[in-house]
Length: 436
Image (cartoon, one colour):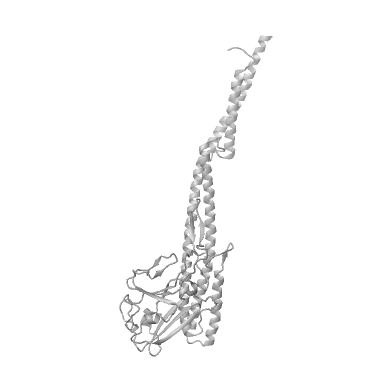
């Protein structure tokens, strides 16, 4: 090899190696110090893109989980209000049963009425519960599309019962006679807009169910012998049938909406001495609320939308019903409250409160089911986030033992290259001996 001084190729090659080792050492140092084997797209372009998408998904899942926690808190607030209303309805029924007892004087019933009025006002206060400034159970968050009619259903009478069935021929579900005779009396009571109306009279051999129902100018009726005929429509305009698709007698409000609902309907059969005929009433006085009256939601569907996923349109729609006293049938639009100031009114109020309790418990059940679903959703989101984090870690996190090995190797090679560069530079000085 020629001895030259202008170009020291040994030094040039050693310098290139030194620069390469320096670059490798810097990369190893970055990985060791950050704990990640991919610090930029330069390290692994496809791995970087995949892991970045995973990071976005992780944050999205975590936010969806936070949404779920907030939604659960909202539902617990609503449940607390409805639970308190249920407690009030229990107390109201207790007071109504007390007022129906003739051991009380009219003055006693007036006192009980004052207490009932306060309880009903508290029901309205419960309906105004808020979460983050939103009213929850005042009807403003309902998913009602169209207004609905009250449907009271009796499935204790024979399936052969029709509107022209005379009272003296009525039978119960298993075919036993109700033993209603012409010396008996009837009393019909109904409650609407907080006002109780009562009608009574003698039972004749021609008095039929149609005549009793016609006493209420706000009601219409539907008889179905086999349950195959619809008895009404719901808030989605779908047809409503008896729950077990068997026969029944349905009493419907003539007009849809809360203001026209039938909050309670009672038929009592009394013997000639004024005693209640319990066997007859056990069948004929079983008109239970099957569908509650609801108003059309102003502006359309206002149900709450709980976004519980990391993608668009992954949501739960939750409609919260109207838990105001008026909607529950406890008072009218003019402020009239159900009355217990007489024995007959108190008896009518008992059924009204029972129907209101059915509404409140149905709402509480709905809220509880959503809370349970949100709990499962939160668990699923947590698990999904953990799994994506594990996958992202596999792509991006550094194996510290491996990276320390690479770092040590690069550091040793760097020092070796530095030493050899010094040697390569020293070799050129041998030319000086030729110039002496």
